[in-house]
Structures are given as structure tokens and as C-alpha cells.
Length: 360
Image (cartoon, rainbow, N blue to C red; front, side, top):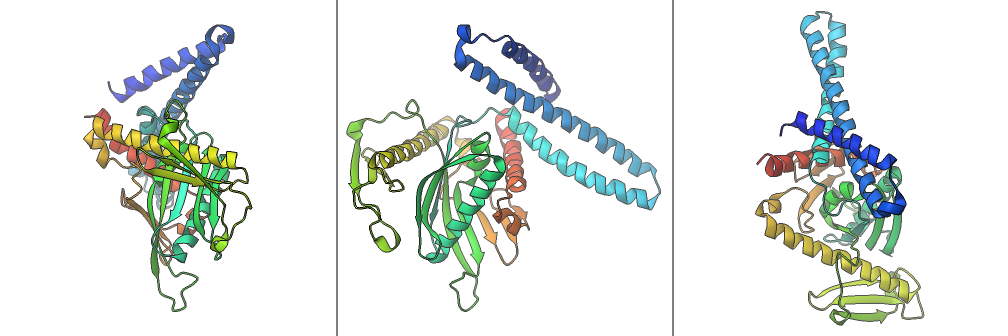
């Protein structure tokens, strides 16, 4: 099936779904069916709208190219060339978005998203950069209108982080943030550096889908639950009761801990949420490797040991190593303006997947 036929079929299906929603009977079909129809409607509407806008841009491109080929007015040529550059950039981004909409949705699409940030190599500087990444994601979440729920937050006396985890709730949270999993490397002069030398530090980011009980079923006999007192700076106790909780999954050896809340019950809930998310990640990764060896080389696989990005402060440069994509806009990106970077990554990833999975 060629692309034109696919879009035509999608537009026809969009009309069917729209009619089904307008005549929907909750008493007969129930809310689950309505939600499924609504999700399909949203996906098809985005697809058709994207194609319509892309077709218009391509018509404008053809018109401008024809004008450029026939005019001798230098001032007009400069204006047309500038317009062409803008149109080509928009065409590239929309083409990537269209491919993303055509490809089958990820199984985690629509789930709440858990983000964990941990300093790796680099001591205090790694902790400071972990805090910078946390602020960057918080500002981005605010721009996107996502709700943020803090799960765990452990800071350092210098203003850095030992670790933080939080959930993101909102449309597009998983599809945008899934590409952030991996090792983030920073190159800059630390505030603790007296000699003005550039240091390299790393931070790991894990992006997990929040798992429902139906996704991951836990046998109580497979769990060991320990309680302890929460600690703050330097290890001093901040609670006088054993409110912190550590849950160990005995079959895998995985363990998670939470000490964010004063309530032991709430900390246990948070720890169980984190454990389910990590076990779901392991399960999905195993299924991916079983179903297709090609997926191992796929961009955006989310391997936390993979170095995905470098932030070079002296050069104001951000480089994503998965596609050798470089933007000289670090200051703006660290302020939470991630759309240009992430949309470019999504477009490149969609092109890759469309070639390998749909075009054979």
C-alpha cells in the first residue's frame, strides 16, 4: 500500500470513528469502548491534519522553487530563498511526525511515565549536573502541561542531587521522554574547580512506564520488605520513626527504596510502583530481543548504559550520539526548551523504524 492510499483509508476511518462517537451509547457499550474510540480518533485526526499541512507546505515549496527559477530580481530571490529554507525545515519535521503517526504505537503509549535521575561518574559535579537535568525536565513538563508527582528526592549540601524520581502524567509524556534513557555526559568547568579546568561527568537517566498490576503481577513470597529511618544531609536522621521502605524482588535481586514521605505506607506504595516499572522494563526488553534482533540496534531502545548525549558548555553544544545530531543551543535547551531537539530525534527515529519495519 502506498502512502496516498494509506492516508485516504485513514481519512475514511476517521469519518467512521467520528460518527461512532457522536452516536455512542454509554449504557450499551460502556466507558472502555468510548475511551478506545476516542484514542483512535485522536491518532487519526493528528495523522490526517499532519498530512494536510505537509501537502500544503509541499505545494508552497513547488511554487517558490518555480518562482526562484524564473525571477531575476535579486531582492525577491533573497526573500524566496529564505522562505524556502524555512519551508524545508518544516517539511522535514512534519515528515518525521507523519511517520511517527503511521507506525504502530509503542505498548507503553498512554501510560504514566517515571523518570529517575542518578549521578554516575564525577563526584559532586555529577550531582550538580543531575540537579540541572532535573530542573530542565521540570521546566519542560511545565511547558507541556504535564502533571508532576515527586516520588523520591535526595539532595546534597552543594545543591546537587544524590537521586530523584518522579512521574509525569499527560498527553505525549512517554512518546517525548522515552528518548532520554541513557547516560548524559557533561563537559564544563565545575563550580568547585579552582584551576579553571574542564571536567567530564556523567548522569544516568531512566525513563520507565508505570506498570499496572495487570502488567506485572507480584507474588508476596517473592518480596522482602525492610524498613529503616530516612536520612538527610550527611546521613543524619530526619524522621524519628522507621518510615523509609526498601523492597527487594528476590527472583531478580532488584531492589528499590523510598524515603520521600513521612508515611511508611505511602513509601511502600512508591517503592512498589518503582519496582513494577523496572520489572515491566525487563519484561519488555526480553520480548523485544526475542521477537526481533533488529530492535537491538534501534534508536531509542532506552539502554541506561548507553551514552546518548553530550552537553559541552564551553561550545554551547548539545550532541545526541545516536544520530550524530548536534545543536549549538545548550543554554536554551537547559532552560527546558527541548521540543526542537526531541522532535528532531523522534523524526529520525521514525524514519529509521519505517525503513526497517514497514518497508522491509
